[in-house]
Image (tube, rainbow, N blue to C red; front, side, top):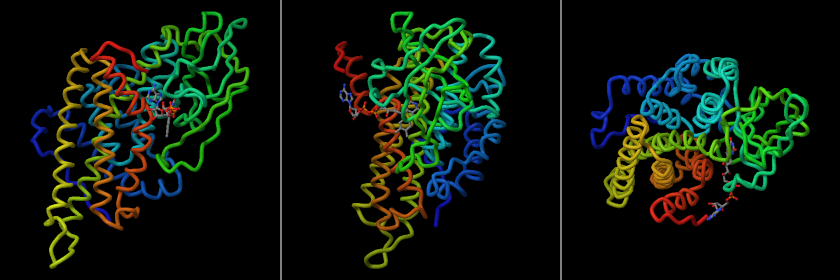
Length: 392
Ligand SMILES: Cc1cc2nc3c(=O)[nH]c(=O)nc-3n(C[C@H](O)[C@H](O)[C@H](O)COP(=O)(O)OP(=O)(O)OC[C@H]3O[C@@H](n4cnc5c(N)ncnc54)[C@H](O)[C@@H]3O)c2cc1C
C-alpha cells in the first residue's frame, strides 16, 4: 500500500520559483508518478534498470538539461535541480543514471570536447539513443582519484589505454566511456578520453549483490591495450581539476536529488502516522514522540530546500564555488538519510517492507552518502575553505 505524494513546502518556498521552474517540476513530477513509481519496487527487487524510460526522458529534455544547443533543453540550473529532485523522489538509482549521462558524460564532452566530439555525441546522448559512463574510481583509488594507475601512452596516431575502473554507473549499458587516465608522455597529467565500449580490449562486467541503487547498473571496467585515435582525447581536459569539475556538476544535482528522497520518506511517514492507530484508538501522529520525528524532518527538509535554492541561484549567476556545492551535497544527503531512518521507524514493521518506498530510499542513500565525494571528504573541503589548511 503506497500513498499519493502530496508535495512538501512548509515555508511557501514555491513563491521563490518562476512559472517556468514550476512547470519543469510539474513535468518531472508527473513523469515520475506515471512511469517510475508503478514499477520501481519491482526494478529494485530484481536489480533491473528500467531502460524503457530512457527515450521518454530524452523527449522531455532531462539529459544534459542545463546545457545549451546540440538538442539539449537549455534549462537553468534551478530547473535542472528540480528535475533531479523529482527523479530522486522516485529513486536515487534512477536519478544516478540521469546524473551520469548529464553531468559526467555530456558535460565533459561539452566543456572539454572538440567540435567534432560534441557534434558526434551530444545530440545522441540528449535523446538517450546513446548512453555513457564515467570512469574515474579505481579499485585502489576512490576518495583520492589523483593516485589513479590507469595510463595512456602515445602510440602512432593515437593512444594505448591500460587500467581498471571500479564502481562505474551504467558501465555495461554504455556506448561510450569517459575514461580518466594519466598520460605518460605528459608527465602523468590526468586527461579524459572518449572510449567507445566496443573497442578491442575494453571489457565491462556488472557488480551484483549491491543492497543499494539496485535499479541502477554498476560495473567494473577493464582496459587492456585499448587503442583510441588522437581525436578521442578530450582536447581541453587538463589535469585532475577536469574530472573534479564534472563531479561538481553531479554533486550539485545530488544536493537537489537528496531532498526528493527525503520528501518521499517524510510524506509517506506523515500520511501513515495519521492513519495508523495504537493505544486508545488514537493515530500514532497524536503521540508527542512521533510528532517530534515529523517536526525534525520538516525542519531539516525546509533548511535543505533553502540551502540548495541559494546554491542554485548562485550557480545561475555564475558565482557558485565548489565549497558551496560541497556544503549542499553533504548536508542534504545526511539530512535525507536521517529522514529515511526516522520515517522507517514511524512505519514500524511496515517500514522494512517494499510496500512503501522508505527502506529502498534508506538503502539507496547509503551509496549517495559515499559517492561523488564521501560525507567526510566534503567536511574536509569545507574545512579547507574556511581555514585555508588542507587536511586530507
Ligand atoms: C553505487 C555506486 C556508484 C558509483 N558510480 C561511480 C561512477 O559512475 N564513476 C566513478 O568514477 N565512481 C563511481 N562510484 C565510486 C565512488 O565515487 C567512490 O565509492 C567514492 O569516491 C569513495 O571511494 P571509496 O569507495 O574507494 O572509499 P574510500 O576512499 O576508500 O573511503 C572509505 C572511507 O574512508 C574515508 N576517508 C578516505 N580518505 C579520507 C581522509 N583523507 N580523511 C578522512 N576520511 C577519509 C571516507 O570518507 C570513507 O568513509 C560509485 C560508487 C557507488 C557505491
